Length: 479
Image 1 (spheres, one colour):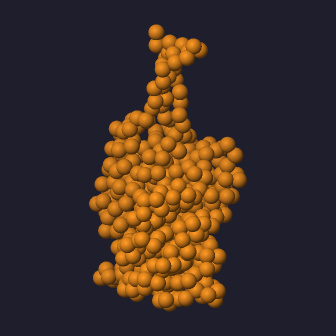
Image 2 (cartoon, one colour; image 1 turned 30 degrees about the vertical axis):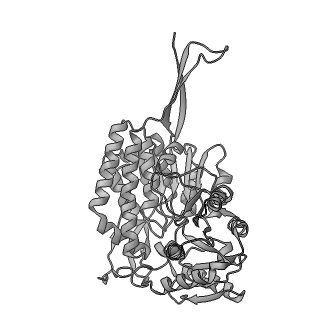
Image 3 (tube, helix red, strand yellow; image 1 turned 30 degrees about the horizontal axis):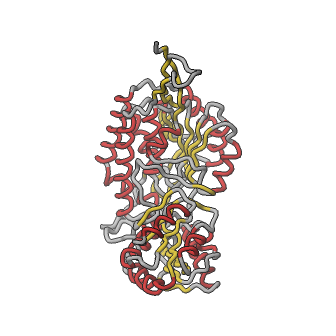
């Protein structure tokens, strides 16, 4: 079933329990057709600063059990509205319903895991009489929430990226002001209201929309912001890092994730991982397969299998139940992927299939014999391309995998324990998945990268809670 009549979403920003619509709004467009399907408030700098002031003054008093109950209610609310939310995300992002339904299920997991973690006390206890310099005392640690978290999320997961900021903040008891992407703000605005309706104090969370530069400047200028949690591009991440001073940063800045296919690999499995890993969510994931690095003895067979699977993909109307690959976020994004594919071909690569573009819709291109230095695989290509880079052996594969500025995730397809162990040790990235796509994880496990992919501070629910809290030590007499 396809959607024909566009909706007209009109969500306000909820700041301190008050609906703010601003003097102006900006349009949100359906990438498949370009139609306006909603509007969001273009908040003034004054309104954003007010939201930050209110959140900085908030002191949520909910105990662990109460915070867990709020999180469980939000999870239940998302689950109850799952189909409507999936369709909303498809309207604002152009992603296929199969992808947006999966995203909604992930967001439910985020809040449920956060509820579980809200109940967990990870404090430590130390004896103080452990040396000749000791005393008869005991030392204890507790975690306390930071005063204020400023969060910024990208367009590619309009609900789940926001959930990964908001849910840990609630679990930690930390106030937050969050700016979603101006291209996909609607699911975030829905979620902000759902959180307050679930019992979280209205002044302790604000979702603000508007001009990205003004909002970022307001956040970085606010003296009470103690943590900035940002997911997005390298250039903005570096700007944030330069301005933070003594404040804490959680920066997830994208990736150029390789799938290493070694000569002993199950090639049927490897091809399926390559195609799914490169094309799910229209390839717009920081952990998508961006490069398939295959040893030459098995490269021909792998390329044939990848081509066959890619040709079978259903690409088109995001609301058609049969569609597997919807649009990119806009036509400019699709044009960039198209240009990089063309550049690789001009430098000796072979386009095996795909590559046709109509607006923001791009048929996934399978590109073989890609030079390791081509822009298509040197930079993060945010789209459903499947570039195949042929390597001579494991040493070459590791060198090529490590040969970009990024270091987020990697996948390895091999049954050779020695080779797998080398990959785990020697690949410079935050995650190595064996016999799986680079992006596999649960919503609870640590997630983050090194080099230009981030500072090494992890996301994932458990780690994000730690990033939004500080450790306090206290000691007691223990005669």
